[in-house]
Amino acid sequence: MSHSCQQHKQQIEEALDIATRICEQHGARLTDVRKRVFELIWVSDQPAKAYGLLTELQKNDPSAKPPTIYRALDFLLELGLIHKLHRLNAYVRCTHPEEKKPCFFLICTNCQVVTESHDQAYKKLIAKISKSRDFKLHATTFEMEGLCQQCV
Image 1: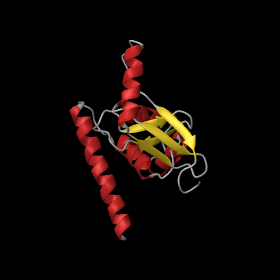
Image 2: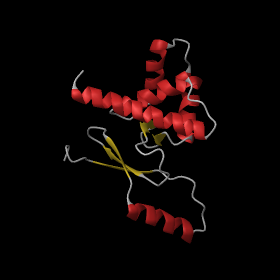
Image 3: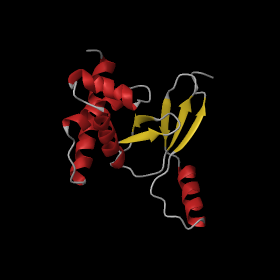
Image 4: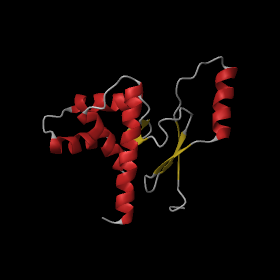
């Protein structure tokens, strides 16, 4: 196993440990299906579509149906373990699931790489807008499309 492959495996294991801990904190269970969907999203370099995830899930569980995948995705979203990119109708891993702070996504329209970003200025802007509108914000998803450094 190469160093980067070993490092990637360790990152996935750490992500699963964090996911398990978050589930326990919420009195929820990371079932085998939820765990597998989480892993599939986590290892993907591209945003994952629900039916692509279902196809992968069916390799080990032929009885899996669309409701199976959507229930797992809803669960993972609710706990903040993954993010939904509405523009792409796809899912990506959350890089900081234990930190509840606003993030935004940079989506490369050429190579489809998605970068999750946290920025103090963005956080302050969201707070300012919410406060000025007397709006209690629960969640925000801001997606920007363009070209990443490699594709420029």
